[in-house]
Amino acid sequence: MRLQDGAGREWFARRGQQVHTHGSFRVIADSTSGGGLALSRIWHDPASIQRDPVDGVGLTVLVQIDGTAILRMTDSDTTITLKPGSAVLIPDGASYVLTAEAPVARIEVGLRHSIGLVSDNQPISWDESPYTRVLIAAVNAALSPPVVDPASAGYAHLKAAIRVLLFASSAGAPVSASANLQGSAAVLYQRAQAVIERDAIKPEFRVADLAAELRVSEVYLRRVFSRAGTTPLKAIRDARVRNARLHLHTRPTPSRAELQRIARASGFSSVRHMRESLAATPDPLLDPAEAIDKAVSDNTASSIPSPEATETETGTVHEPLQYRLSATSGGNP
Image (cartoon, rainbow, N blue to C red; front, side, top):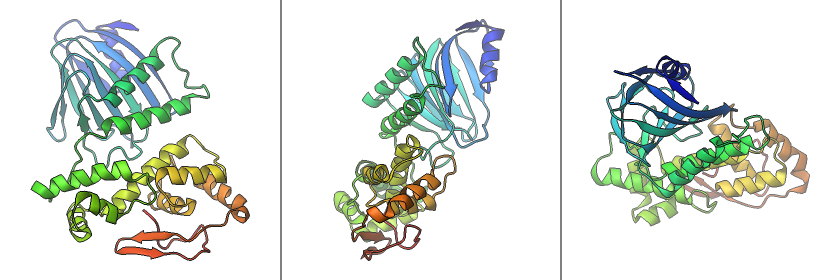
């Protein structure tokens, strides 16, 4: 698609963006959208592009392909320089102005739901990485003829793959720490988050293992996380919930066996713990709670649970052999 001047500005306006230029304005773009995923490949002349806050809990990711652009978040005055290969993740509730003094090209990925990629209304930026290059290749392939069809059976899997690539690409981004953390405590908090993202998929990974990896005591680790407004256990649980939602998104009607595989692959020791953790952070767009409950109830008689160790904020306890799926006490991270 090739557009110029008024037609180009109108195309951006339909996307919720206003274009400001001092001369002729050309746009070359490809895009597709559907099912909560929007993919775009855009080249345009020098311009300032403004976006106001968008209602919703989604996000937009800008991946710079060619040229340099300056992103200014208008609600916080944060400025980010986007060079080829670098990227920024912007929550829907944030407004920005993107300025380029020369022709630029970028990829834009829009998701209707952030699925834990952002925890506040602040942008997350990162430099070029191998995962970002894979993300770029995937979007380019999706937009090259024949363009992927949002109505096709494989589109939901493409959306899940894009989400996973966003997790992988942004994994190296600095973790936002609380203003109460400074110096060595802030560094420790960021290191802890990186270890959690790496090891939360292991069902046996616990707060004690995190403290040992960081070579600090559990007491000090909890103190640092407390100053950041959270706990190590909650951070581990949140990482596992994100993993579970990624898996469950592509399986709207999972069987009991599939749920067991998803639970283990996400870092949960059982389906029960996965279900309780998802229920503790409800998300009507992503949690197929009824499907999980039905799959479990349909197969309860054929599945005998084993004793499990459950971690709490103050230590580890052991659960009895028998339990009900709907129980709400305890919980593994």
